[in-house]
Image 1: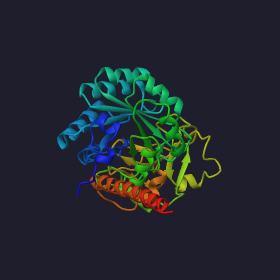
Image 2: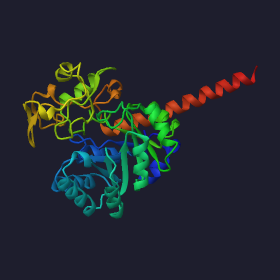
Image 3: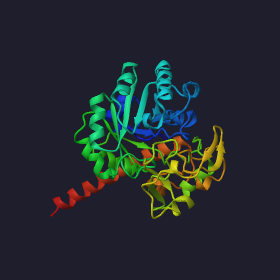
Image 4: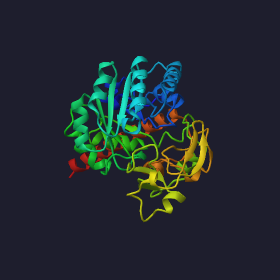
Length: 349
């Protein structure tokens, strides 16, 4: 069954050229071609997570997406988490490949936005504050992704999405996308009501069949309940020290309950706890467990947002999108029915 898209034809779907206002997060590691293409094929907008990847890997992943779908997609890069030389090579590769869109995160770099735009790509910029949203819009971003503190992975701001989203939407002229704490169709409807043109979801897609995350990580997300995530700066290796993340609680966060912030993992003894296709993975690394990972995955960065409490099964990415849209239509119908009932009761008095 195809969900009714008509009520959810938004400025975002028109800008990105997708059927549904759902963007899958460009999660570094899990969001490879298999996941991005599945999301785009299902009517959403898939993002490849290519942070710190080589130009050759980017070319291979883009080719794999294009072999699997003719729908639009994008590539997610993070300047703050990438050495300048590699970032320049990544940008060169994306522009040479003529990727339809690029998403950036963390600090706002107007020169990078300009370069992507000059190369013909749409630009999405994920931010955690109104100030950065305004900077990104001024730089030329076509879409602003407002990230609430509920989000998994790296967390830029400190404000909840219910407050941050309407604040940004009230001051921004381009489409705004809500990110953080959204894993249901009702969440999509709520985001639209608060001024968003769509949603940006990571946690709900992490346990899907197409995700490149390790089964251990997927199962931990599925088993999670409310309150099981931790906001901390413990996991910072590969990023600047002091960069906050949200992860599922584990033995590492349990041991640091009294000092979740103010940490510098680079100053601690280096300890290898796992290996993956790139090599050794150190304790406190921002690398999360992938299909190729072996070792002590319990101690690794198990990125997950607060919405993990709402993710309870492993399905395909297409089934996730179908469920979200079905629930969104049901939530919208329920709201309209309650409004009509209220009006009828009022009219009879």
